[in-house]
Length: 410
Image (cartoon, rainbow, N blue to C red; front, side, top):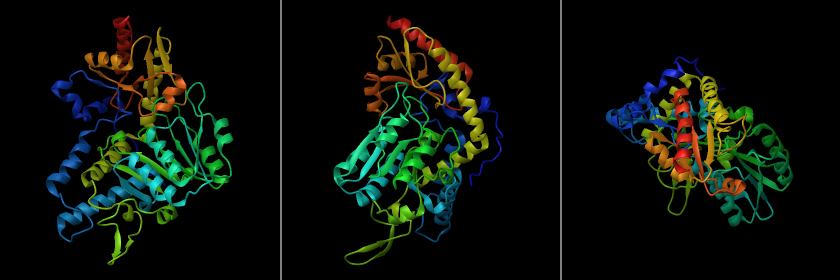
C-alpha cells in the first residue's frame, strides 16, 4: 500500500524552498533541465548536513550510539522508499543510481539465467542505461536481442512490441516514459503480455517516479529502477526494486564487507537480500537525503505535482508547436513534462548556449538516447523539462527565448 499524506503546500510557492534560486549568481535563473537532475529543497540539504555534522558513522557494524542512529536512519529510508512505491522493505536495494540498478539486474539475473536461444526484448525508446546492459547480456549469454519500434510521433509501437514478443522471450526491458519524446508507456498490457509467455519485466521508472504515483504490486512488475537525483534527492543514490524470490535467486554483483553471511578459507556465503547486494560502505548521507526528498514529495502530494506540472507543459507545448521554424518531438497528450525540439538551422548546442546567456538552463545533445535521434533523423535535440519550482512565467520566458534564439541565428 502506498502511503501518501495530504498536500500541505501551495505548489505555486514552493520555489522558495530551493536555495539555488536565491544565490546571487543565479538571480533570474529559469531551470529547465530537471529531467537530467532536479534541484534539491533545503530540507534535503539539511538532512544530509545533519548526518555529516551530528551522527556521521558507518552502518550495520557497531553498537555505539552514533552508529545505531545511522543504521536506524538508513533502514528507515529503505522502509520509506518501499512505501513510496508500494513494495516491501526487503525488496529495496540501494544502488548508486538507476544505471547501476539496471546493470545489477543484467549481471545478477540475466547473465546467470539466460542461455542461447532465449530472447530479450527492449525498445527503441530507451535511455542507453536500459539498452546497453541488454546488448552486453545478449552478447555474453548467446540470447537474442530484439527491439520494439516507435510510432512516427515517438510513442512505443505496441503492434511492433507484440510482434517481437515470443514464447522464447525471457526478459522485457521498457521505460515508463521517454526522456526525449516524453511519451508515457502503458505498462499494464506489456507486463501482462510478457508474463503470459513466461518473461520477466524490468522497468526504467526514472522519468515517471518524480511526477506521479507508482505501485509496483499493482503493476506486478518484476524489477523497477529509479534515481534519487531526479526526484530532488542527492546524486549517487538509486533504488532497485525486485520481487523477493528474484532477489534470492540473483547473484550479488559486488563482494566484500557487509554482504557476507559467513567466510571460510576458500568460499563464502551471502547475507539475505537486500543486504547481499550492498557490499562495502554505502552512500549513507545520500540515503538519508533520499528519505527527506520522499517526505518532501509526499508533503506536496504526488497527484498535485502531476496535475500542476501537466498544466505547465501543456501551456508550453500548445504554443511551441505553432511557432514557425520549430520542430517539436513527441505526442501532444499523455506525456511527461519534457519538451524536445529543434530550431531550423540552429544546432541544439548553439541554442542551449544562447538560452544560457538569457539565464535559461536547457539541455542539448542526444540525451543518452541515440536510437531516438536515428528515428527522427537528427544528430541532436534541445530539451526543456519542467518541475515543481517552475511557473507559468517561466513557460512564457522559455517561449520568448525560443523566438529570440530563432531570430538571432537567422
